[in-house]
Length: 232
Image (cartoon, rainbow, N blue to C red; front, side, top):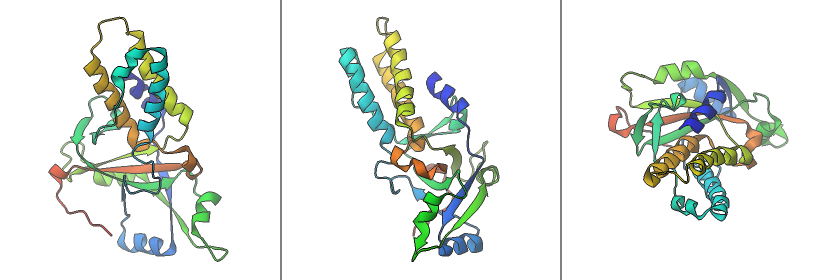
């Protein structure tokens, strides 16, 4: 928990983002005053929702070579849950089996890489719309009652494989430090899983780093839902 808290306290949270979209998408957003969110397991990155688990597996194998003790922590994956209020990591309420959706934005409001997604017949046919995250978040979150049944968090994405690996190493090094003491294996497993769960929604393959994505993470608490989800 200390490793995660330290990381999030240093990692700036996105204040605004540019949403790139087609002319049809732009018209739909302006007319409806709504923006679509995609389910986290239906995004363009096939490794989405498993990236941090894969990095953990690779890092753990290195530690096992040094000390077989770490075999105790094989097979741990992020949990299908979300910690409401995770920007204030400690004390976040755990939402079990949530429906997690994301709306993607970019830190760069004039990115050639992003414009290229909307290149048709040698013409750029797209729009970059600025969104103020504070206002969007304030419209949705009810921190006391969560009365609308969902919460919104916003983050810059973590792409760097080395940085991800270092975060995991810090956690495993803490366990290694107490290796010769009386250590609760099951408690360690729970902490590792919590660690992976907190990082999972903001980790993405380095091959998408050119997008400079910052995202709004919308977590639907189905137990408190007061409206039906609409799909297209």
